[in-house]
Length: 243
Image (tube, rainbow, N blue to C red; front, side, top):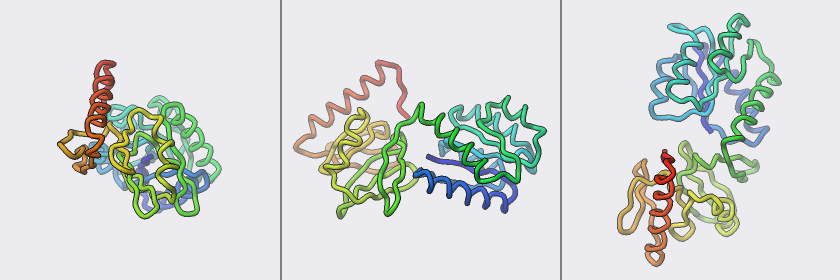
């Protein structure tokens, strides 16, 4: 899960970052958080990053959060928006641009927690996840963000679009977490790949959209390639686009 904090006040961004990090730790959520002090940098980043959630200040140096929210909706309608501002006067305008919530500074941690729980309830309708223990804590990993997984020195390594999550467990324990989901393919020893991220394949490997290469087990090559071909065919025949 990826969130953007957009505010021209560095102090306010840091306070929000601390509260959001606290929420993620308390609720076992894995979230990559990016901070932006101007809206242009944030909108440019949307060209290569898919955000699940954006926190916007209403008052910005060159524009308003309302205008930025309209642009977000054009670029990625799935990205939810929570406004954080000094005034209640724009609340009606905020909800007209489909804002999930509207927090007035100085908001309390409980205010943010309530807003985030509403976001989680909304996201859970459309998104699936697995829960892994990373260090002393459990964290939720969204399935659509997993590119592939491998195994090293007794640790499962989950390579997501934003980071690598390491969890101490055997592959036999981990495998049933992903095997029911048709887009995950066991392709090599203790390695599984999300077929939505495959760009092409060669004789011995899959090539992902980010350029990484995932081996294909030689003994099972025909079976693996056939499963990948069937997955692509089923998606195309149903008119489902692969990200």
